[in-house]
Image 1 (cartoon, rainbow, N blue to C red):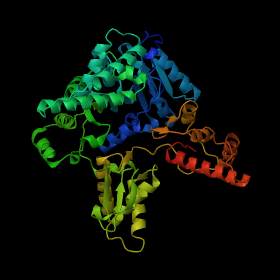
Image 2: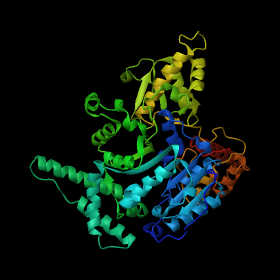
Image 3: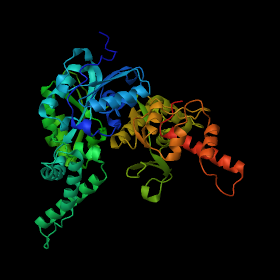
Length: 539
């Protein structure tokens, strides 16, 4: 059997599900992308399959919003999606057909009925937003499918609601579920639940005297009000399935891992690596963990207690796979590096005279340095974003910039070691500081004479102002940007689009025809720059 071919379609008529009646909105989840998964596997000493030529299975694929852009990005890989809701599968098939994908297959199946060994092995298996929302037998089946269909060196991603944090959030859900226990219509369930929860959240809960009980009640009131505000922003299509689904189990990490280990799987990492980096915690926390966490499962469980964690996105591998969890700089040499940070001169309060400050775009995290190689390497990364550098390529470019008029005081190997340490330290703090990839994103940064935008993003933009880019991120468009992007088919120049935009819009007053045309041309140029920086151009 050739495992590189998608399986044939069977069992196309499962029973109707709640997801057939209210379709869950499509979305891409960057943390579940095979490249993100492979990157962490490489960093932890594995040799996962290259994302450009792999097999990916998604359980609970819905309308394909997560899987289809992957298949578009990597035409030489094979993608299979399985979902119980036939209506959602129909939407997914229509979308993949519309952009002429030949490397993706969607199956309308109940997981419990998946017994066909012709599915073969998969290098990556994904189940996002499904495990906590299905009955226990289906949860067991998901882990069984992981064990049976994950390649020997494969990596599986799974997300689920986690205690202790979800216990606090779950109080609100339990209140709403009691109120709507006799309501069956999904729209009415959402309306009644919202109305009831808003009523409860706004009942005064403070007491006159400043006692521990009063403080507890005040904290409870703040929790409910915060949850009510969050739910107000959530569309019904998500609300009825996330909070109001009949099945919604949260469990402690160690409990989930007991189930995974019983199925023959072991913990690799969390999809968001910085959550597990101990240097992000105070010294007394690190001391406690050093004294009481005897293995990786205990360590991760204690971290959940400290963070009051509500949700996990866990990577699993086969239990017989030998892992080395020590992060080695040489592993970084196998990856690609970029940084979305901004840079500015240091201020006196930074404590680094004549240095450069690199900060995340929300300015929550930063570091300052006046070391020439550090400043040069991070400057190259931030200037190139979202394009990536290999480690050797980056260090050689930084050395050429730093030591232009002098003999390098350090060897290439010394600069490689120190730069790798700096990059890993920033990556361990936040992906908003440094991002790592297993392969370069399939995008272009340079704007060609006849630019091409992602075909899938253009398909999405026909009916939406939110599209998925080539880095598997959601990008917001305005109407003018959408107008431009829809015309980036490789046949149309910036001048052509400017003329179209001019004809479609109202010309500004007190401008000559030449000034008007130049204004539109400049506007198109800015939009093309935004689309390139947003990883939406492919040619």
